[in-house]
Length: 347
Image (cartoon, rainbow, N blue to C red):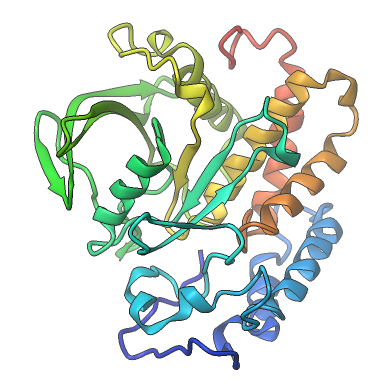
């Protein structure tokens, strides 16, 4: 995620005009830094990734046009400044989710790939701030979310990456009109039998008396701007798969939410673009290939198309070249597990 935080002194305009922190020249310099060749890679995917980035520059040219689907003017309004964790990661107007009371939240709806109803839908959002945790839970309620996937620790390198927006196990807390209670917590092993991810069940209660359970899966070992070990990533994918289809395969006492596969997966890291976009890309590619095995052999073209699909709906999704190459590597690795017995819940 970009390192430039929004300061309280920064002012934006709600009318057409320059957007200094979104000018393509600034994004280009950022991209050139983030996509520099790594010590272990010849950056074979750099040309494809550069083409994706060039298309993003063209969209950013429209970011201050009130009538463009890629406008970010609502996100830039003065009253919404404090609700953006980073001032250079803003939701496009055409995919921006709106709260029912008209309130603003930095979140984007990612429909199923090419709107195929057999594939998952997603919500990509930033890590909640202290002043947006209530909006986050309001979003969960209004979108019918049953699975939240958190892909960032609360802090890294002395910097806060996300506010702790849930109570400890056995405790409860109210966020506006939404009351949440953590009713259970489990550590899930990684491929190395270490505690890589934490699973919680959070009971959401409304003033009307309606209540339901939400799974909260938290991965803390994926560093910002980086890739994750492919085997660990496939384990994470398998755990999400299990929550969607057979949660008792992870924890025998978990409640089985039968409607989970049809509801959007809500994901966030810190900015909601790098790690979040990488997970959505890999998960979408695997789900698509499992249903379209005739497409085996076209993985590289598929990944490019998926990342472009995501970038059209939320800027900077799959944020670095290393992450883009990781998407290709993990998708290719998943196809070698033909029986899926190690990583995927049988369906």
